[in-house]
Image 1 (tube, helix red, strand yellow):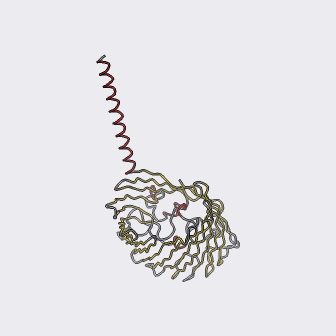
Image 2 (cartoon, rainbow, N blue to C red):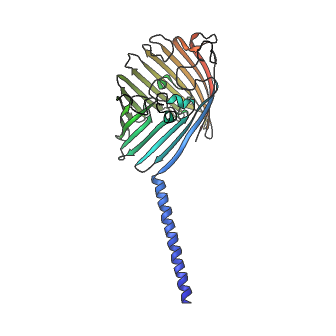
Image 3 (spheres, rainbow, N blue to C red):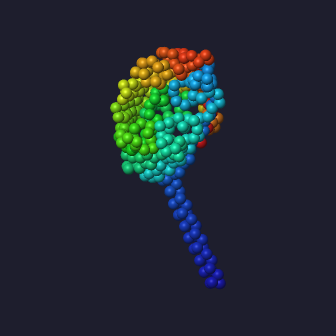
Length: 357
């Protein structure tokens, strides 16, 4: 009888110990999950685009391209592809990394100056590691998208599907080291030393660019000095009501070759329901010298571009119809009419589908 009692007692102790050990292990796993996290996110996008007052195909006889705005991305005629964007990240208590890969025409355009090593440059959009030195200081080393401008490379993070001239002719990405400082609840400061703009895989000439960003309550003043070139950029936005937002981007670029640009873009956006919103991008962009962004071949040209975009959400899918009008000060070879002659304006329509995960 005593033997049976002792055996039950031992079994009970063993069971309790097992449960206790399992509880500790589970708690440790939960604690680890709370302090570190692996994530996989991204997007895919495709679109249909058509010019309303210009040609929509490549002319093989003349070698002249199809008409499209001089800005980046969303320029292809008919049914066209954007890109697949895959972003892997690991967020630890003090450190982490981001590996951002892109596949497709938009991704290739985004890293136009990178593929020195063809095996990596055609797909790497961002690749960096970071260290939270303190609660107020963060160091980042690697390749990261630019801190200048209102718009970004990923279509899922922009309201308009096509991009602005200011975004297209500013930097896309940098490779280097940057330090972010949280100066207060409202003020932030970033300082960076980087390779020359958009040369992201290695330093090819031993020269460096220097960047700084001062932030205050969602408003940012950005500076970039790059071997004789200089850009100053303001990016911000204001919630004017619960349903109305106004974004703003203004920039001035002075190039080392005595050409440059200046411009301003307004982004009024109104939310009409949980699933639909409407936004306008109104941009004025002017070249100094014969910069080449507008495609006129004339010095000191300018362009006004108005882009009206609707955004309808169905779960993780966004449908974006968009009407765009570009009007230049001079005839542009980007705006070829149906007779393949340059003209001052281009009107176009597109509808894009973007799925984010």
